[in-house]
Length: 274
Image 1 (cartoon, helix red, strand yellow):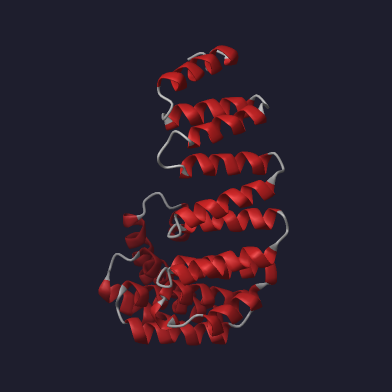
Image 2 (cartoon, helix red, strand yellow):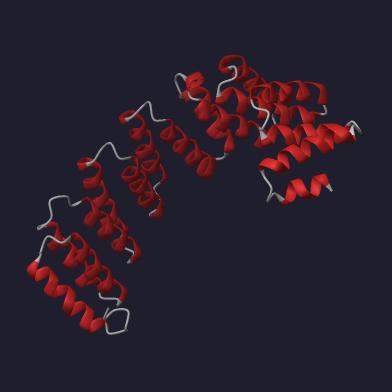
């Protein structure tokens, strides 16, 4: 309450008293450290967290907080040292590894950041999100071709990782290689059938066909989707757009109306129907 009233000195005293009574109160430790750091009393904030680590059983939260303070205070090397300890203590957490990589990037060490992402994959090779994170890192720091090369040559069992395949398709489109994207999506449709991954691949493939002017192929895919789910908004919208292109306005109106029924607040659909 004192903090909300602007009496920070009194708030600090109250929290210090709480910690004297309950030295293992993580909430009080964090609150006091944050208050000190907000008042530019970084040394006091560090001390509160370091002392707190001696009182609590699980030190991870306090270490993360301390690492963030060092980073804000331009002492990123200390943040890195702390995050290494956190990763060793909790090697299964990808979030901790990603934080370590972020700190390496802050000091300009791209190679070590990349190594962190690669080690994260080795620690949990079935976690597709880790492959995606490395692909995004490569895209941001080395360009889309590097990300494509990694997914194509560095990922085993790619056909069992649909999210990674969809990312690869997006990369193909980003570098203007639609033929490779179409081939990828066609393979996914054949492999995944009418499972959610197969339906999504059909939508991506239909959009590619529309862009290339192949309305017939796009229409066939859309009908396959609607046979599985007549309420699929994406498919209804594409069907309506194809009908407009073919000047079949009755079908277009029916498609847009059906989609609007399931998405009544859509401004795009309202515009299309108008």
